[in-house]
Length: 318
Image (cartoon, rainbow, N blue to C red):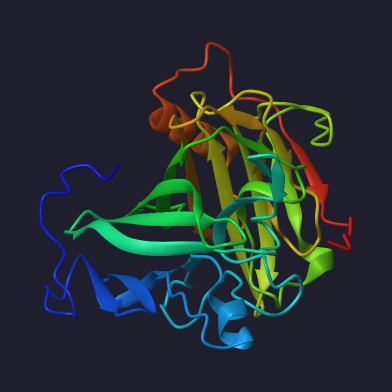
């Protein structure tokens, strides 16, 4: 949560020229701005009037913009794996009432924004709280999600901090979130124009093997886009489900945290992650580790972890 977030959102650019502000392009997207420049754009539209428009809007996601606020550094619809979009959430094998549902590739149903429960901005940050329904094939909700995105500016070496949390409630029956690390969880996808051979990943462990290791506290990625370098860290809160795996090896840059979990009927699972965005190369490990400790309230009893840096040479057909 953003500290001291006391001021209500002022819609349609009516707030002060400095600090954070939010502007709602009704039924399309909501922009978060800092000093008049776009930093994030929450894509919440849902329109099933045509197949193309449905494909474009079948799930909400968060775009991250470059430092000038001119274009996203994350991917939208279309391109290489159209279902990969910005900062997004989903599972490809959701078990509900004896059936399996794919809310990753988005076949046979959608994740639909219902309304904003809260939107706030002040000099320190902005917060968006979105109510979504995860539909079955008949547009009946299986999961009710309260998605909170708290966005704040941080001093160098990072530029932006995004706390992403979701409250996932199983509606009327058990929900089993299932799948695999490549097609499920909370993930980040860089823009489509990345230079694949220049993508690298950093892991907080010596001789790391993300295909086998569990419960990394964080994983980082650096990628090249439009002749500039960008770095992003995804942090895993210790209260999230255990046996989390990070899919973090694709050269096109999609990476994130995956777990499986059974949510009992009418029960709620709470998850939270932090994303740090930097312009340029990955900041020093001790800087990342300090922010993870700030995020979690957990102080490591050992020294700064040794790391493994891996180039993004692996490719996927999914």
